[in-house]
Amino acid sequence: MSNHLRVQCPGCEHIFVPEFNASIQEMDECRPNDRSSVRAWYQLAPKERIVLALMAEAHTNEEIANIVGWRGVSPNTVARNYVAKIFNKLGCNRRAEAILYVADHPVLRKMLADELREFRTTHTATEVSSE
Image (cartoon, rainbow, N blue to C red; front, side, top):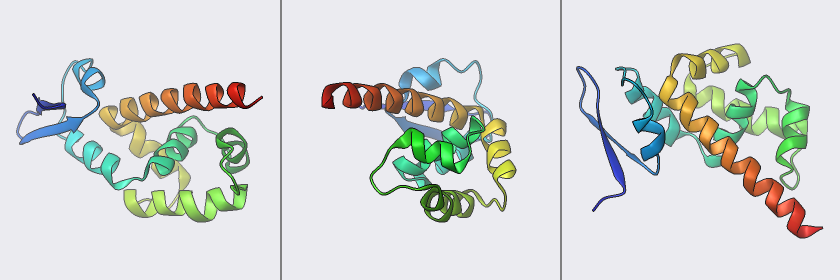
């Protein structure tokens, strides 16, 4: 049996979404723009997804750098590397556009929230175990 969930969107092909069965099943309906949500999800690298999720929570680059705690990540690195790549992949020019993109794509928003929740759980567990 496949680990993929098949989602039927009105007026579009089936979408196969690995690892997000519960997230997708919780959605009341699947909108046509959910295909672009899934496409955006796979275009973004895992760290870019975390940065985008934190951007959607209105964190600044400095706050994001402090939250993620990745080695060598400064506010400038967040802006130059992660945010710039996110803008390019989503077709945005400004932070507000990227945040609106997330707001307008409920499946992407849910997937980002789940990934961020998992990151925070893992990040906190790692901090506690290293002390």
